[in-house]
Length: 121
Image (cartoon, rainbow, N blue to C red; front, side):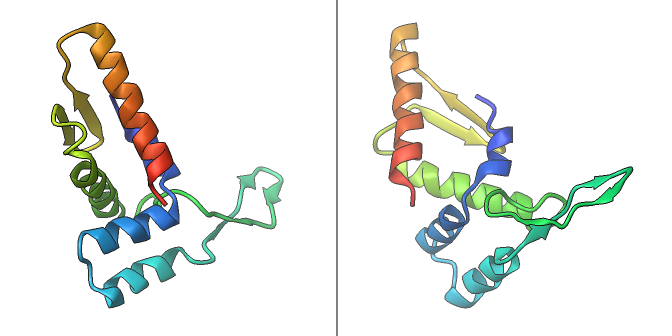
């Protein structure tokens, strides 16, 4: 399963939670979160830019810190659910779930998805 699109959908509370779970010092955690607080973007067209709007989800594209933040999020999730899913492997933005049958695989993927969607802040 390719988690590439998850990069744009990571909630800021999840970033904070995962950094805390992995023991990142409060001063660093606060610095990272402050980078995202009040972040705005605008849409540029041939007719000009709009007034802009606040961006409340996702990891900033183009930032050198972004790949590290995504790895931190996936690592914390992996550690949290390793007990539940011993047959999973995360690498970069890919997830591998191993099962003996197709039905078991579908069940494991749905369980993984439900745990992530319902258990994170």
